[in-house]
Image 1: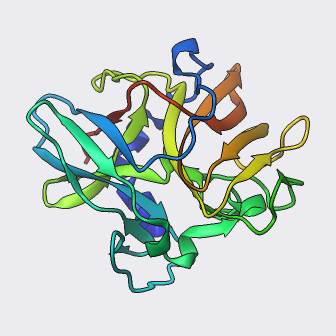
Image 2: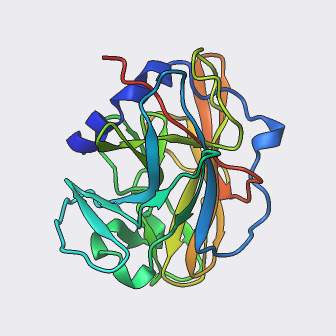
Length: 258
């Protein structure tokens, strides 16, 4: 997790301004079913180094270092990447999502605990493992899902300046030169079988927010999903995770504050 926190340092500059009330145009839509790829549009600040490729990245909190093959590559210290996809001249890339058979076991958790894999780790948002999560199939396994600083995982990473760096995936293009509220973000969740996952009435407790609400209907394979945020005053009151079907996905890339 130290590696993940280090990679996410560039987005810390806007973390304190994040998590305003939900914006209607960024609310996730009804479940679209599983997908094999995701088209994304690049958004970088003026003068940023060239960004050439994008890929989906998953996380194994145990850092199992399981050798990979096929459509998944071990990136080091718990991170695993899908196939790199190149941006075209317009800044658009079609990110190919890896085959489920190629995913190492460590990037998946039982469905009831898929948002508890980061429990106790710094700089992350997670649901307490004591939550009485309601799942339709207890045997289903789902990709570990969390928010590190303000970036969801799994997440789109981009290749720039000779290394892979995280982006902030949103339904609208952000003005990267100003601090702003982040109302919603996109993520992608893999399930090894069809499963519904929901928190009980009133949500569940966890880190950094008064309540977590999960309402997912996952098809076997990759499912687009979205986090939305609400707050009361200066306090983050709710983090919600639902199926997503965003018309557009922007990968917003930040300069390193150092």
